[in-house]
Amino acid sequence: MCIRQQIALLLFSYRFKVIKVSHNKCQVRKIVAKKLLIIHQGALGDFIMAFPVMIGLRKTNSQIDALCQKKLGELARMLNLIEKNHALESAAVAPLYGNHPDCVDAKTATLLQSYERIVLFSLSRRLQENIERFTGSNVLRIPPRPPAGEKIHVSRFFWRHLVGAGLLEGVEPLPDPSAFMQILPQQRCIGPDSAPVLIHPGSGSRKKNWPLENFILLEKMLRKDGLRAEFILGPAEIYLRDSLSTPHEPNPPVHIVDDLPRVLSLIKGACGFIGNDSGLSHLAAITGLPVTVVFGPSDPVRWKPLGPAVAVVRSDLDCNPCHETNERTCKSPDCFKGISPRMVHAAFWGLNKGIRRIDF
Image (cartoon, rainbow, N blue to C red; front, side, top):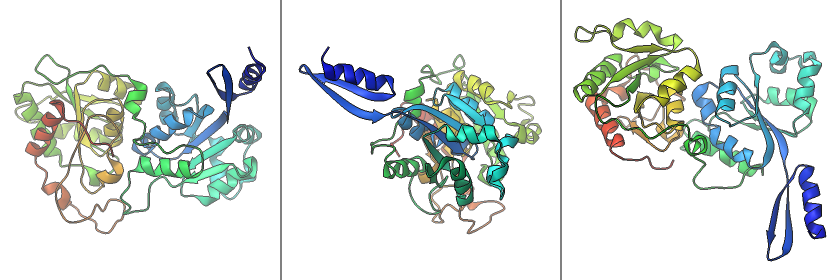
């Protein structure tokens, strides 16, 4: 072993990487592996949009942790995207959001100081300044979404910010979370003996929900195709359960789920997923499951779920997506009126016959 190799191994032991040897000449590329904390305040769908940058950051940092909703941190850890998760709901971090950051306890301050770099997904400059009282100027704050009306996918928006800060390199296309996680076997919807199709008629906002009667008609169409279709509802959507019953199907199969591991278990046992622009649609897509998503007032250019098999169904109205701009408030959005169950049914079968999404 030459002297330069010995030095390289020594540097590696002190958290330096990568070592490259070629033609009997030792080359050492010095990349300091750092411990990095991601702070994210969003819900499931917003959080999943950050998965590609988590994958990218894992390649250049010795440890990636997250301060976020407890259930989301546990999901990211289960999917091997992070090593540790810290609960955003903890009372210990609450003073960071107010006018009295000095009230942060010593344990929380020590935790923040243990990271060489912090990536904060937030609109709050005050939160950034409060964190930097303990850590110095090592906080990169990224807005949780692009400015309203900007035609860029949210994940690409994040990636560009991190490239600009020197934390990531420009890569086309972005990392595919489903390829990284590899948690689903290939299943196809081919008949009554195949796995079920999951239908999720809810979302985080009722304004984004395609009318329930359309999902009921779609379930009937899938049964006529010889498939098993099962509804999935979260705790905030239990009110929909009684409305799913019809004279022809008084007791449709409905899963009431209140934790993400249970949702993942259902997704792993399914052959397809149909839903609105919701967190569960995003979760199903990043596992590699074929997902058909109905978009109304939100913009698929910005919020299309990440995954290798995603079909988007939306109307051809001239009006711009208004969910984030609040330019108009519709009791019954016109953007859903042009989307029929037959259109979603056709998109579902097109996807399951091998059509793949175009990279965003």
